[in-house]
Length: 375
Ligand SMILES: [Zn+2]
View 1 (spheres, rainbow, N blue to C red):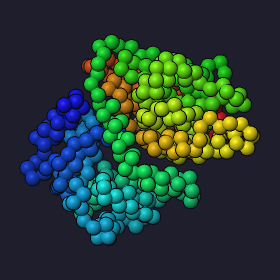
View 2 (view 1 turned 135 degrees about the vertical axis):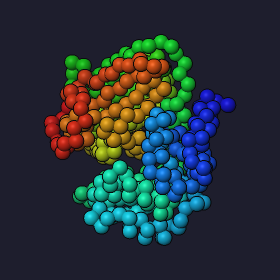
View 3 (view 1 turned 180 degrees about the vertical axis):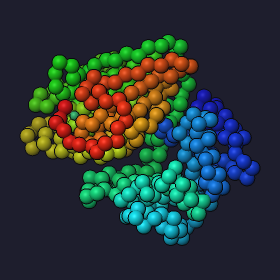
View 4 (view 1 turned 90 degrees about the vertical axis):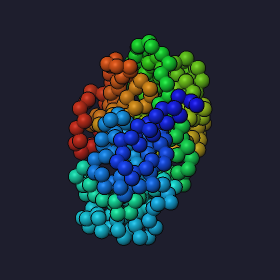
């Protein structure tokens, strides 16, 4: 049995022992950074108010509870019941049921009103219908970019789940090293504008932060061939973190997939959508200017499929020894600075912010995002 399977087995035993009688666990899996608990008793789970929060803090993991597909009420019945729980002012524009995961994606103009205080309407929905709600915002202006990305991810749901499971097992692998260090390698963007790309290395992990192009300088790409990056093979990199979608930070991310990388990209959800838009535009401009594009649009789709969106302020395990938190840097819509800590085994701790203008803000300030100059 692999160490991850052993870990999941132990977690399942521990979770079962924490649950009140009558609530069963049918499976426990990692999907990306989250621990997903499958149960045949989602309604009872939801009734126990803060059970999930208690489990999450005890196990120190992000936990999602999902119903086994065969205990779900029919979408048509569930739809009516869900609409009685959500206030009209929330402006629900779509409900999308995914029987394979037991999730219902609720698209609303005011997601905050669906989520309510401490998520109590969400628990009420699960109590009523068994489905697990996931809330997304209806774009304020109809956006083909957002709907294209959402529809694409819907089509690719099965493959996406496989990707998340694989990433989850990577994140929670056993730590092999007792060494302690954090090293930064710059692959571009020093004493120059453009081709932002940095490698953060620990004894266990290598994380690529941004992978941009250099505007107006054809062929000057980040030094991806060094051993810390792809020189030692595409699997040498554990994860990519994207701070924002400007092309000097994001243009060459699809190139990584062309070179064989198939790991996760962490960023905010709006940055994922903007990234896809700008990369496709980047290919278009290259074609119109008669330059050979460095990758094709299929690689842009791969990048989107491998993106794990995070909210500002969430502390997320992205490797056995690295946690990631995104903060609003106030640069462009939804630019973020990043702070990481390696936290193994006990109080080992260090943090780092990338040397860009975006990095100066380290407090999560939820102000209105504003456009600003590029960089
Ligand atoms: Zn920028």
